[in-house]
Image (cartoon, rainbow, N blue to C red):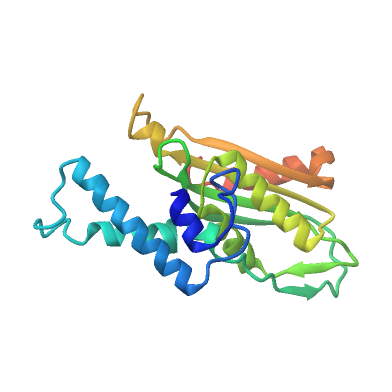
Length: 225
């Protein structure tokens, strides 16, 4: 992995698996990473005694897995974050906006098994600030979820990005998700067993009434509740 990273000229491996690289990969670097990953996955199949040369079901699987890891499952590490579209807050609206559920599809850093669930945003815009297009929250979640990480890291990355780029009066992000490292291994828990994590900022951190309003909205909308 270290040698492949040096060849791609992307600098040192980030401290955490959920961090982005110093800069997005260009097309040549992306292709080189996919090729190198395909080779290593083929070697792993050999170790596991999975025939990827003659079995019609797995003959092209190493390449498919490599492409999905780089382009989709971990794409948030290698691609730039979404551009945020903002609109003038013409009515100087400063009440709570709640949006969700937004699908979360991520990957656990501990066992490389899926995390899936829903995210919710509670936004208190500034009366003299901007309003963010609602679809951008979906794009933000999708971008940061495409990384190898913990749910705690994910909710914090999403929240800090929104605060930094939109400067709201207050923000709270809630993620409720199932971890397949718990449902498909170990104790083999029910998928009803979910983890909930939140990130809060500004007035949504200190205003208990607003927090309760947000949580009531979440509970009424949560498909897993």
